[in-house]
Length: 259
Image 1 (cartoon, rainbow, N blue to C red):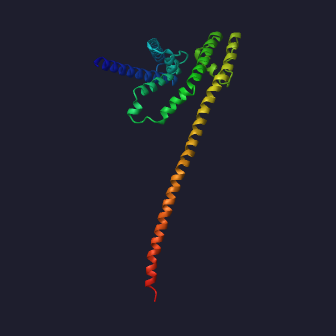
Image 2: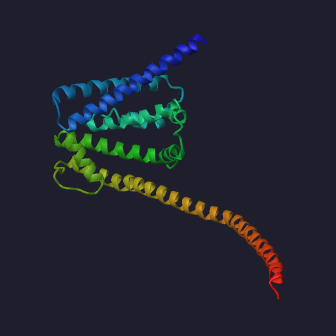
Image 3: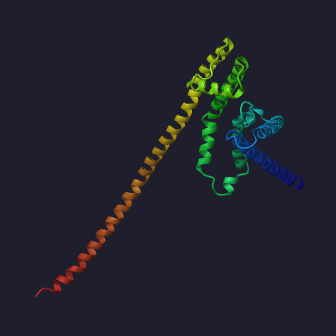
């Protein structure tokens, strides 16, 4: 019993440390993006935290019993350790959502509701997490290959990959080598396919939710209609009874007033 209690306390301490490091990493990236403070120091901190989260991810991957489930549930953790750009640190916030659900904090604070179920249904049951992961993987891999072939920075290459995959194509970064053009071709095809599926998944989920809500309202109205009709009949009967009583009271008074 004592050992179990000790393990639970260690797990809570570990989760607290992960939470602090997550907020620290996100705050540090915000400072970098806003160019506030010493960028060199912030960059060193960002790289250090990246190594910590990468080691943590590898340690959990090696210890887990079902790696397939782990890879699915920890997709955002994997995206959060991509060293392409500091902005990928924002994906680490997905870890906090899982920690909150693990400790049932929403339920304990009595704020657990329908939105948590909707979130889980949207992320996993619609296949959004798979399409999103594949789309990000295509963009990141293409950006890396573009950076190597075109001798560009990872930041510029990532920008090029995003604008190309979304078919925006500003043209400020373009491939000049044959290998770079091949990468761009695959990225455009992949962008049209997977990002199009990603957009349709979001649209389909919202449309389905709206249709379900409308159907539920119509069903509720149909269920309530007999109840309302019964109440109307009851009220009508009471009004008729009152009218009968009033008529009965008025008849004696009329008789007394006759000459």
